[in-house]
Image (cartoon, rainbow, N blue to C red):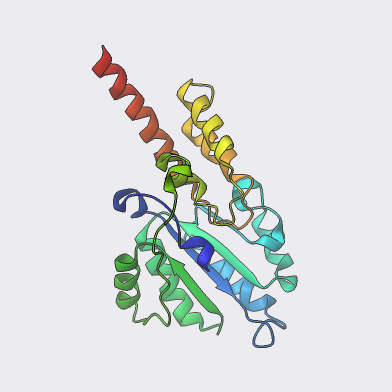
Length: 218
């Protein structure tokens, strides 16, 4: 699940951003996996994820995906993804998944030390660790860091830089609330790993910075 490994941000604003991905393997456990994926989805939903979905669904929960309709569609799916805003939710989900023992691979993304700690607390040992080595090359061509913190929450690059800039501007002008802006930005990402809670906080941070700048000028 490398598309969730490159989320930009600070340690502080990544501390409440976790993604989880349950994925079957072709010729191994994909055939007839629907009931197991439904069980996993039920466990995800039991801890109130911020968002969820998968590419086969065509849209995420944030974009109007109905949980019951989505559950019925999992007979033709191969994976389920979601995101949470608290370590306790991840801990509870992993505990329940361990007990359910579906045999389906579970990938958790977040700050590595936090993930290792949570896994240890529920008696799990990570099988594989994938680390992002950062961005190299002509980084001056990249969007601003504040924009990247939002666009990289969609690992397939479907949340475009101009869209983030436009929404951020509307939030600054009071035409959208941070909550409305976050939900709007989540629409293009069907996988369900775009964290609305974190996006709201990032948009509020930008408002706070503008307010501080205005105070300094005054």
